[in-house]
Image 1 (cartoon, rainbow, N blue to C red):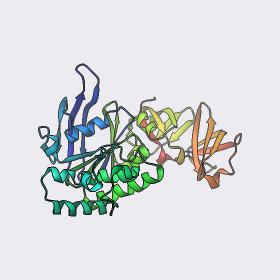
Image 2: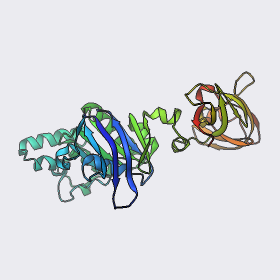
Image 3: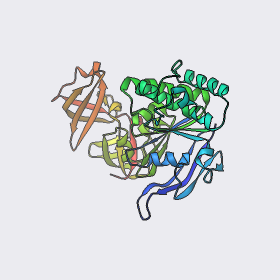
Image 4: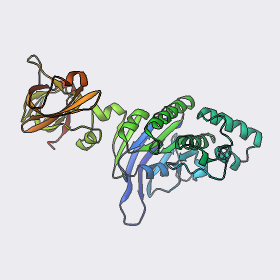
Amino acid sequence: MTQVELRHLNKIYAPGGAHAVKDLSLTVPGGQITALLGPSGCGKTTALKLIAGLIAPTGGDILFDGQSVGGVPAEKRQAVLAFQNHLLFPHMSVAENVGFGLKMRGVDQNSMRRQVAELLELVRLPGLENRRPAQLSGGQQQRVALARALIVKPRVLLLDEPLSNLDAHLRGEMRDLIIDIQRRLKLTTIFVTHDQEEAVLLAQQIALIFEGQLQQFGPPPAFYERPRSRRVAQFFGAVNFIPGVKKGRRVTTALGVLECAANGADDGPVTLTIRPENVGWGNGSDHNLIRGQVAASVYLGTHARFKVDAPPHALEVITAAAQASRIHPGQSVALHLPPDKLWLLPGAE
């Protein structure tokens, strides 16, 4: 189980150009799945290529288990990158594609056939050794690419948008397969994605990157419950932001004085945020009640989303469909903001 450490990693593709990766430092735990998450063009794929050794950094270092691999060429680094578009050899069979890395290492035919069969069993493609890539579905091609990466027994498995080219039902199957393989092999796995839901479902740790810089690193719940900035919160679907002034456990806002569980924010200007699914319908016995009027509602099958006008703010509420039938546009309502679900961001943004 290899720990991967990035120390002040930088990458500029052209002299005088912008940073694709800027002062990126993080420690990826060994034996876990870690997501590099961010919008397109944020530098996450560049970071993956730097770890693989496919491109050289402008500055900084990469360490595997405390040892620098900065001077180790890609073919000897034992970090294998499976690309988004598979890059399978069209003229080769599935078995030849999977065994290509072993062939380059001079492994004998009998051992190669045995290992290829084992890997195809692992990725749930037994019996397809003789097919060509053109005879496979997109999901099957993705599994062949995964088997080809795994057969050389890498210390670190790198995946570039592993689910993005698949249909919805295939994404679920591939996600379950990656999790199952990682748990069996205890292999340090790093993948990039622009989809926060995909990152949350697959990864044990998430590194959120904007403009080549690390914004927050930690387990998925932290991004929902303890975002470091308004931008991080918004990326994970937060829409309710209320500026105020904190003193102790109370925040004075335009909606009144709200009580919050302590979260380390200093007294002074803050921005209070609460996720729509954590806002409740209140009654007279609740603390942190806000009065408002339902402006709009959208039925979403298992749940419903409401917009509630509470001047000078408009808050969004998500509730179970069973509860939604009694709430209608134009209706006056009371909203409950549970103190333990309120999170404070520094500064009145």
